[in-house]
Image (tube, rainbow, N blue to C red; front, side, top):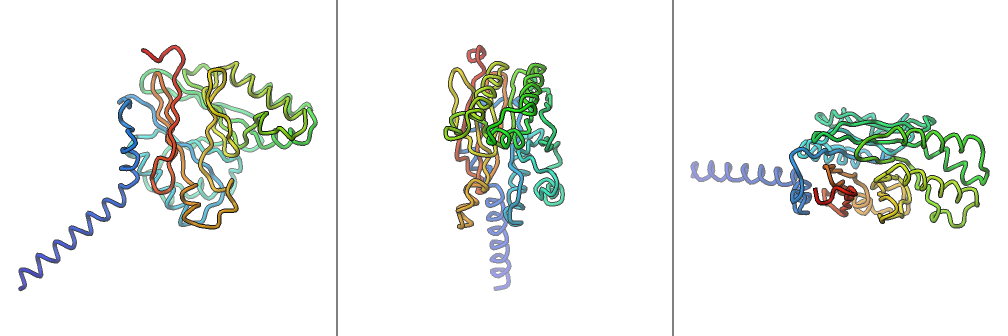
Length: 285
């Protein structure tokens, strides 16, 4: 009887270990099941984009731990945070406290900084330019309906920053959409600024715009892809916590010589959307 009881105890302990292991790696299995590795290369660059702002502590902790596991698995090199409110952002303040191994560079917009870029060298020899744009003040001025000197200066600064960008891939990060068709009922000056913003980004070869709010533009031959970072600020009416967890999450980006792939991952570790951008002229190389 003692041997039988001892064997039963060992069996239960092993079973519990397997259950814990499966639960910790659920997000990875979901990501892998999305045919993630079909075109992935050993020299591809991976990084994460996430929205800052307030989250309940349990959801914030879950988000950071999932980001940590994904970053470890795919060897992510850095994190891009889209929120402009740096002071008091618990996600930014708690990333090292909650997550012991997510000690990656965090690139983030600094309110009132205009625009600036981070130039990242990629493992396969190319480079990536991440341009941050202080869209908060620009959006506020746009909606006031007055085209003033400050707005013109910001657009000139963005033009200067993008003109200096020489990376193989170029992305712009902002908290607001700044697209003309999202302002169909707005002031005429706002529409002009939105159109100018699009013209500048297209002229200087921007491949993607990462927005925190209201991203409604898709990819086409003459434009660029806009992708919204998952967050619950756009869905304040949702009171169901499980629904908010499905809406919250982050983006995992995989960058190669010829393509830029973005996976939208929710808090359950599920890939709920995949966007692929092909580098023009390099599709067949």
